[in-house]
Image (tube, rainbow, N blue to C red; front, side):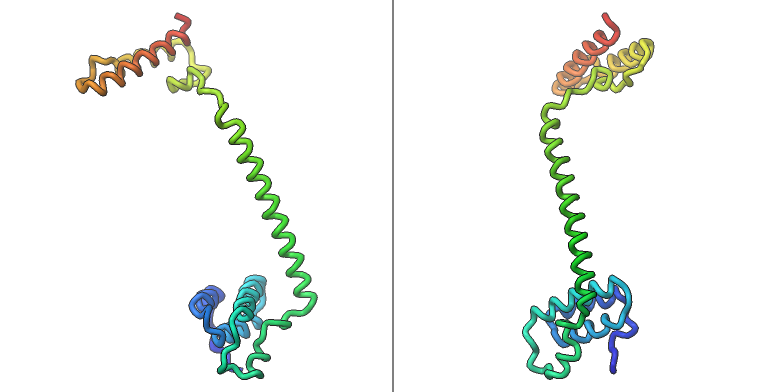
Length: 178
């Protein structure tokens, strides 16, 4: 038997499948080659090609004998089909479990996302909760230097800096207990 795709890799066969997905004759050749190859990836691609062949109407140029020789329908044994069904059922169960987990996670985000507590005062001024007073005082000085309104020339920038200066100073006063 002539095997036009004997030296083609599985990736090349898959690319050929995409290229010739409407050419029943080429698909029959690809299917025949894949039935000779071992491994689950070859079986999966052969099954995809078989579905596509069954979808396409028989080509008038195909002889009944050639179509019968390459026909994917009935080509697999009952045991192979049962094993494939079990594998697909297991995959379906895995996908349904993953979907359920994602739905629960999404519901949790919806439930807690809007009601989430605002960041702590320490986090708002970029400090750890365990920051000592001397570090809080040093950060306050740095914030005052950076956001003091007199340091900015543009009026819009000056207003934003004043707002940040006032908010940060209030947070630092609260943290230092002043």
